[in-house]
Length: 347
Image 1 (tube, one colour):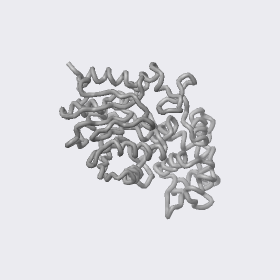
Image 2 (cartoon, rainbow, N blue to C red):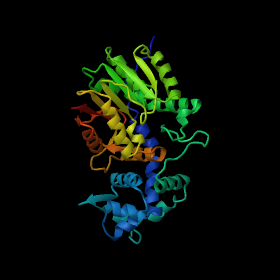
Image 3 (tube, rainbow, N blue to C red):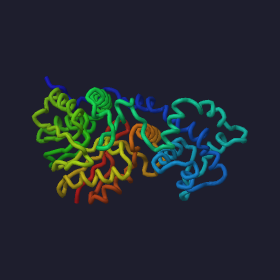
Image 4 (cartoon, one colour):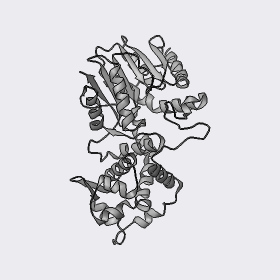
């Protein structure tokens, strides 16, 4: 009997992921206090975001990850475009204050994780896997990727499926697909999101676009879930190759792997693949539009930053890019584990 991708987990695994990502909060906090001296600099006077960024020697992406996390922690606030210390930081993270704990944080300043985070912040480059595997979680021409090697591609793809299997039934239950006959799942990995949608909507067919080694796993999953006759695997580079025409495009946990220029380029390419009235589904985590939290998403953004060329984005950032492509969008529809769906409709 085929497996079901529509069965919901009886418990919500979100706390497990929050605990798993908690270490990134420690690393960013200690790096900010002991190495980059963010609190020391802001104690002198409020500063514009870009002025602080230049003062501590960070590019835009790492600065966004760091400042969003510190704001989510309630340690810095934004007022009239300036970043300044919160009351909490003024009391406890400024040298010379009677209740300063910055030296206590400094006890972890040489921890390997803190030093690795500091290197990622300063270099603005993702950590690499073992030299023989290359970068772990991103795949495109010009990047030596673990996703190009059969063993590592299988391991990483199936590892990511652990979360996806929990989220997929929520996506299928909530995403609107009225009038959609063919779905293109770009960077679809195991294809579990497409599989859940296929099981939910009998009229639907789907194409999963990914690397050839990843698609070996996709084909196995489609067979195990009984949808191999409605799911097609297409090997390709989403930044280079022509995208198949379709009624809707799904980008599930894809855009957060890439920096702003790549996100905008990919959205333009996906928009070109759908007709007027077609849908572009961004399934991802979303920062607050004010870029000051929520903290679990800010910490996930830090994890993405260390492993990929991207970070988490806000719905406002995605909406601006969708508008550039001639798409309108509505509210984010929640799924699970801090994820949601932002639906863009082509005019």
